[in-house]
Every structure is written in C-alpha cells, then in structure tokens.
Length: 400
Image (cartoon, rainbow, N blue to C red):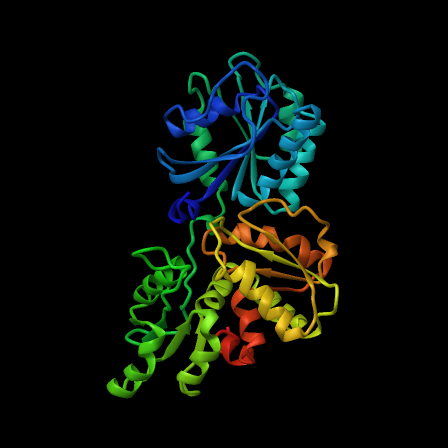
C-alpha cells in the first residue's frame, strides 16, 4: 500500500462476527470492498481499504475479524484484531441485536488505553431496535453512539456526521518537518546519496517529503549527491541555513559542512515530525552503555526486500557492535507486526523514521516501551550518536 494512502485518517471497524461490519464497510465505501456472508468468521486478518467517503473525504478503512472468534485460529485472529487498534485514528464498535458484554468492554478498554476515540454503532436497527437500557447506559457513561441499518443505508448521514465530529484533528493535520527551523527564502541543502536502497528512477520517501516541506515553508531546496557538496559550497559561495543529510553518511557530511551551518538528517527531522522526540533524546545515550547479551529491538515501519546494505537489518546492528565492542542480540520487526517478546526483554528500542506510517501509529507502537521505562531512539539519532555528532545533529530542534 502506498504511503500517500497510509497517511490518510484510519478508521477501524470492530465488533463480533455477523454484526454487519462488512456490510457497513461497503456502505461507507460506496462499493463492495468487503465480502458479506452469513457465515461467521469470513473476515480474517485486518485488511486496509483506501476509500473516499461522501462528505468526509479520503480515509483508510481497517476491516477486522470478529472479536468473539473461537478456536486456536480464531484466537490468533482476535489477537491481530486487537493489535490493529494501535494503527487507527478512530474506531467504530459495531453491535447488533443489543449484544453488548465482555467482548465489547475489552475493546473499549483497548481503545481507551491507546487514546483512540470510538463510536458505538447500533447496526441492524431495522431488525432489532436499540434497547432503552443500553441507550441509558451509554448516555450515563457519556459514550458516543449512533444507529444505522447498513443493509439499506438508513442512518448513513448521521453516522458520517458522527464520524466527522469525533475524528481527531491530528488525523488530518500534517505537521511540518522544518517549520520554525527555516524561514521564507532560506536555502536548505539536501544531501541525498543514491545507493542500493533507493528505488530505481526515484528517490526515497523521506527525501521527497523533505523537498516538499521546504517548499511548503517558502524556502529554497537545493538537492545534490554527497560527492557534489564540497564543489557546490566552494564554487557558489552560498551559505545554507540548514543542511540535511542521509544518516548513513553523517560522518562524511559532518566533515564537509562547516560548523556554522546547522546539520541534521532526514531521519531526525522525521523523528520530530512523527515520533516522541523528547523520549528519543533521552533514550539515545543508552547506546553508550550497551552490555554483552543485551537484547535490542529494531522497528521498521515498512516491509521491503532487503540487501546487504539494508540500514535497519545489517548496518545499524553492525555499527552498534563495533561502537560498543559488545555482541547484543537483535530482533527486527517490520511493518506494524506484533512484537512477539515482552517489551521488558529489551534494553533498547530503535525506531525508523516512520515515513510509511502515521504519527499516531508511531506513538502507539512505542507507548508500551515508554510506559515500561525502556529507552527508545530512532535511526538518525542512533547513527549520529555512534558517529560522535549527536549534539550537532539534534541542535537545530532542541530549542523547540
């Protein structure tokens, strides 16, 4: 799934089997994108669907398996359903025939734990109207709810209105990578190596995002490969207000860029944009105290084919071993897959820039570690620390 789609607001659809979740998704999408069946358990793993909802706009619908699934395979589906809560901006809890009990309470607890706003959707109200007891209970608990018959569309407008009013503003807001760092007409030097990780004929996403963000701030982006930096600075006598480099050549960029020009990396600018920046700052020095046998978790936000030049799977582990002189163990989790070990097994967690996922997804992914007091850092900060230029690399953002 492309990044542009993934950065849209995510709406998760949750509930028991045969509560009409798939019919509701088709109604919201205005087309048949989910399989509708009377057979319980038709939906298995969570599936993302990019759609345009009338009067709401482009969103990602996350279709999930029934939370009441049974058996060994069913329990695995339920686990993935609950894990998907971390990726959504808003949840719709679908109930039918006034079934509301432990399954729904568990979901609500997960929503609250992950700071996910939610709406209870009474579905199939044409067959079974909501009970006055449930209505009174939801009103007493100040829970948002709406009524709909997804099969014929009755109540659709009210549902969209309720979704719109409860969607957090952060789901639509795209923070700036450079706001407050560069001013109108400032020159920003973007150092972009073209290596084996760059897609053929294209640039990697953080570089593209940086160019757009510089332009959005009415500044001037100058993009060049690392082998042209020294010639450019010497020949054109231009002094950039900021230089941004790929983290992998931090040490080389540090030598090329004069000290009176602020220097940072694409990954660090993304960590400010999408991650818990202060926690990264606090956690990064843990790299200096790595011990033999420590377990380190590396979190990638995307899935991709790897090579010997892969930064997360090969380079960072190698650099950490060389820097520390120790042999820690590494676990690597790609995409938004579940972390199989208890979070307390780890001495350090290293998150990528997060260009492929939303700010909410990065925060919810790292929340258990922060709550458990596990140090966290990100690719750019970790590399800067190991290259001995951590303070210089984060200096442009520290005053904010």
